[in-house]
Length: 346
Image (cartoon, rainbow, N blue to C red; front, side, top):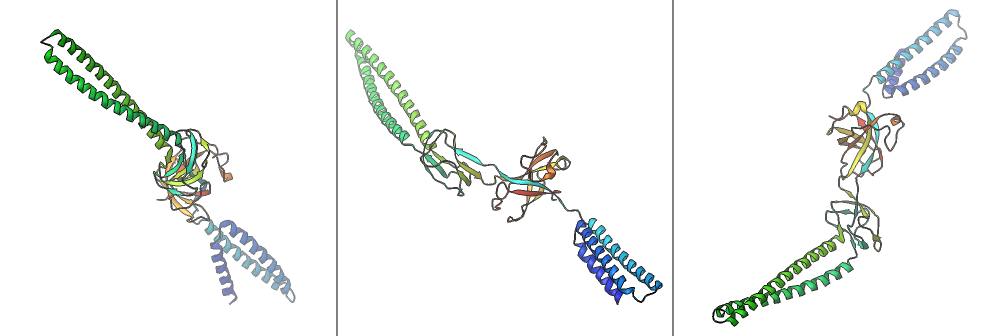
């Protein structure tokens, strides 16, 4: 009965230790050995009373035999735990996004900002508008000049048509008298002058139309719209502020712009190819794990990555690897550290 109880304890201990890591097994082994040594000394001291030398030798031998058996069982457990399937290697990385800074092509005062931080916008949605009061007045004046030029062009065209009819009538009479010939020459000269004025007026109208088109384009550019669908990350300027040409007003994060940056050693990157998939882990996030494809592998090494989360990366040649994109439905914040597991998934 005592032997069965002992074997049961040993089996239970083996089961518990099989779930431990090798270091934890060694620590447990040391603790058990200390308890066994202390318990053996106490039991030996209690059993010494009334025993002869042969009994003492027999008791010590049995205690030593049980102690050696326990150590052997735990040693086998430690070896088995150390020979278990290797855990995947994990390398530090972080979430990054390629944001777009949206500004106007021309200077002006911001009339209104049509979006708020955190809002999701579609392609072509209005982001902000500059004050276009001056351009509107300039366009109205230009349109008035263009209307007057068109009226003058119509009058010149009518006058030219009349002069040409007069020249045709005079030409029929020119054969009868010298005076009629002189009148024909004057009619041709007048028609020629009117034709030149009409051509100049036509050119003037074309120039005014080009100016009108340019003004309309400038007016359209005063309203800045989203080039792609995405999320408004930051509003940098607000209504009433004056901005320079190209100065960013809104920071826009396009859909699918988030990615994972990691730095892997050369011994692994030489086995890596674009399109391979790696598991990425962010503890505490929802979800905690993602499987992302590799879309960029640097060809030049770096001594250390620009952001260090792990001391293992110091003093090593590392290669930048980019994975992604992170799905839009996954709310992993930009800048948060992640773990990239090796080896790649099949």
